[in-house]
Length: 451
Image (cartoon, rainbow, N blue to C red):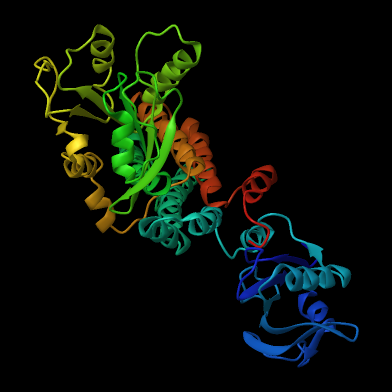
């Protein structure tokens, strides 16, 4: 991190302003060589300075230059931000001048990476920067803000602090058994501590399901036989004619996707091919995709026709719904009732006539109830939300349960001390207290250049 980096921090295109960001030991002096105005090496930190960017005697643009001196900047280095007029030509010319005068073009996410390596942010907070940029809903923005504030990091730090206390007491008992004023750590004393740790990790993981819903949305799959109204339902939810609707069976042969918000939560809706036996190769591939989507979905909207009896293949699929989040939609209630659902759980059933716009609001309310969306919306969103962190915590939980089982089986504490320390180190990879360079490279390359 000895060199000085630069990149365009705003979207490239026509706009009111563009921002070129520079960070590193020589950032102020490099910008000063192409700036006509005050001597930037002598101005106060956190000031905005008016002037012009020049290339020898040629004026490139009229600009405002922000100076933020180390360590009080995003990267904890000297940072300069050049505000130019928006547009591709002036922005690129300023960037080229910086590169000619000693800067290096930043790699993707390198500003955030430096902020992490310099102790400005934790690794989990670096993830939240991209969540903030990609946020499509108010709740997604609130979740990213909460993570950036350090609240989520504190959850992990508190777990690690308690584990340090356990590890320290065990080490003192092992290394200095003659100390009478130190509590002797026995299985009876350690078991409640480990159980408490397990319960807290389980609670964080339970709450983090909400974080995943906020961040990724609810993957919702519409399933049913041909002509039950799947494409009509998608169009009704999206309030646009996205999917082709005809009376011809097999019209939808591939997945059609759309997205809506329900109380700030994204619903990622997938309309699938109608499920039936077919000799049409293309349609049969679509049916296979439908069955696969059914397995992967967070929510299944299983549609049935009110005026059709259940077929054996649909009965077979209905029997597989018990361990999934699902809503049975009985469409075409304006027609004669021929369907018999007496053998099925009817707690999540919505009667609907899409043609007459009946049942859409009831369906949305069912989704709110199943995922407790109102509670998610009103609660302070302090959750783990990225798959990497959740996976690490799940691994830690398994190890904690193994230690708890070992203690209950009277395994000696000195044998378990290394396992406890390993969990402590693994928890550190969530915040980045411990990390591998390869992990950082993989993570930060997902960022845009100016971040």
